[in-house]
Image (cartoon, rainbow, N blue to C red; front, side, top):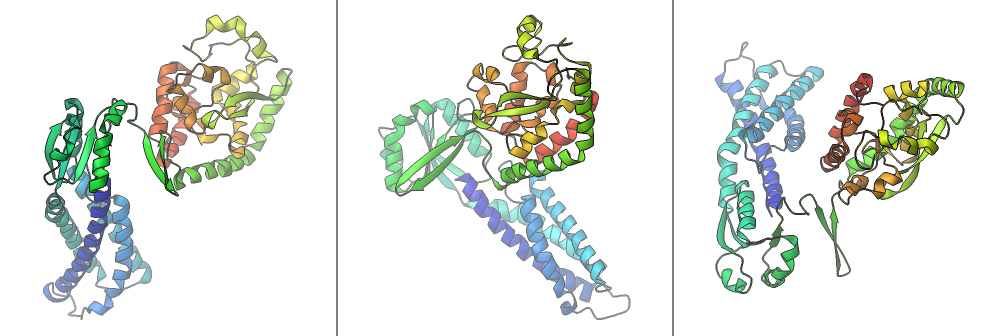
Length: 448
């Protein structure tokens, strides 16, 4: 309900912004042509500058859309006004650049300054007086059903909305529901725990019959807090999908496509280094250059992970001899000064060069450049249900754990960081993690 109304208001706001921008353009022309004296009394015709609107309208449209410069649930002044100022500022720079490149009208600089100033004033005026008044006029009658604690949660949620709501009743009452909505009512919200949803079936059915939208409010303490709900309908059958993994979007598709492309380029660029590393591994000890290990990938899919061998041959066979030296808690085995590690292997681990063959895994699609580190089967078998959620995203070469101290972090915090990454994933977050990985590798913090 609120999200849909915000979208509608954003579209209306964008339309009004463009109209007011054109008005600001014409007012700037009137000031420049008839109020502010011209240096050489040269005529300043509207026709000579009207072509600028073919630049202004699409540029302002894109900038204001990207800035999300409309009604926000937070209602913070900076969220309302700063996007407008940024959009006009960058739009003006683009406009001046276009005028300079095309060597256009000589009087344009003062005109553009006037236009930018008037446009900023008009667009801010929209947000100070018109938008809030428009939002408050569209009030809604809301009926909330549920326990007192959950009703209070809903009231707080509604209070952060820029829209005005008339909250009619607060009763955990389903038997007399029809009497409760005898007055004006636009929206019914059921505030309860998921296990009690079935008791409100008659409410949902009544709302369907009367055409009144009904929503379930889920408090942050409940299981579904971070769950995304999607409904698909096919030939009369509706499927409700619950998911806590990042939504499959064009950004996620581009992420995985770039993983393969960038990994291939890196593999070609690093080929001389990989050759040198292979030579020294073979020179120091017996065994294969590449170590293959079974790991769990996306949703538990099994794949072979590739690494440069950093231990002596058959190191896994003597692992049980050192279990009492494990420095990690619970399911992960890590130890400092592991005697099974070779001299070359120690240097490779210090620089994280032993992970470079995993670029092949990225090319094959088993891994991503950024994502939770891929666990071994033994670890996954000992995960809690919540910890298994880290498998809901493709594993990666680097992650929050990698840049936060690696083995200096206990297992529980490691899991929290991985789930934090999944819950907050964005292309920008991936870029940040890749950039922070470089100093983390150089410092060698937590690498052993």
